Image 1 (tube, protein in one colour):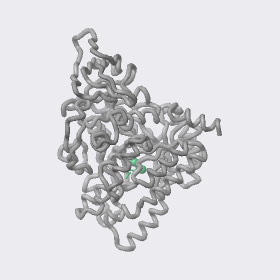
Image 2 (cartoon, protein in one colour):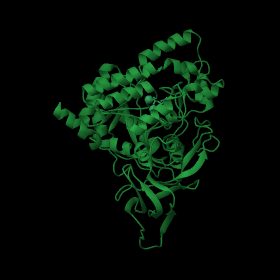
Image 3 (tube, helix red, strand yellow):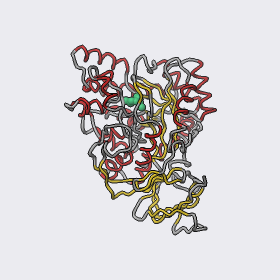
Image 4 (tube, protein in one colour):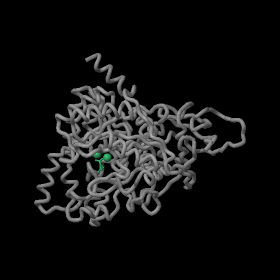
Length: 480
Ligand SMILES: NC(=O)NCCC(=O)O
Ligand SMILES: [Zn+2]
Ligand SMILES: [Zn+2]
């Protein structure tokens, strides 16, 4: 099928470092020209999109999803079709999901399994982080192969989910050291799994079985301690660290302090952590409370979202993901009598961009350029996708969103495009609405109408030694 020729006219092109009034011309899925009053020839066969009074921004990159993830006795509801379709409706044109092997199982097989699930279904581009859930020489060999042959440049290590995915400190040390050697980014789920196990035992013995028990067992201390430990281990071996789903003030402070000390650490808050809070665990409707269960949990202190957003605006935190991992009410009911059995996860892939605009830009904490940085460009830089992704410039992939900063929409499970029957942002009125989403030069969503085909997205390889990250690592090493 020939690719659409597209002219986006009269908008304001916003990158992370500047905004200019300019047209954008796209051919063969790539940006060909950016400038005033473009008039590409021939005029026939050209689709023109009017962006007057609108922003033209790089498509969002969601650094953290779990689509059709087999987890806690069930499988997350949004698969690679519904999840990526919902993503483009919200202005996101690339997701990075996680291939997660069981302990003792092959990382390469997990990667292949996830890729086989994704390829026939994705409606936008995607990549895969791979989890390291155990440690051996075979794991090392497979990490190397994934980097060299499969375009993987990030590995996630769990400090929680004891006996399932959790690594010991010794294993973390080895894994971080090897990540550094390979030129990759070490990601951590930072929660102390031993403390969670002890807290859980105590709470269940006290007869606390509801969703509030989840929040109490996964306290802020549990997250902060693990964050601090991960930073210490990574810094010891000079490995760049990316802390996924930063949910608490305490953990965010650890990251801020480390960055102030010159350590190469990045923090990823998620849409839910910026848009809602952990008071929901005490909601008297069990299904409502359970729908918010995730790890680390949302924090009961209602000033947390604002605090995290301020750090994101400041560059103390770097990118916004979602940890989109949806389970419907029936699936959540697996934990009706025991909070430890409530499948962990919630939505965000569709609403991330609007939530960040509303709570970040509309509330006056950040400008349009910082919005682009935290929703797209910084992710592209850290994971070595830049400037193909994360920028509107000649030669970049035409992953573009026409964004109406004045329009509003009200988020609801009744109207969202995700497979789940609950939305943690229910009722939130958001300024900032994607009018059109373009994926590799194809208009996939326009004024509420989809033009997506399952499998049209591509797997994107990510080379190691991202210059944005590793130039600093190298410099630190030379000087030290
Ligand atoms: N976060 C969560 O609750 N579910 C997905 C798995 C993970 O990221 O830890
Ligand atoms: Zn996690
Ligand atoms: Zn996750």
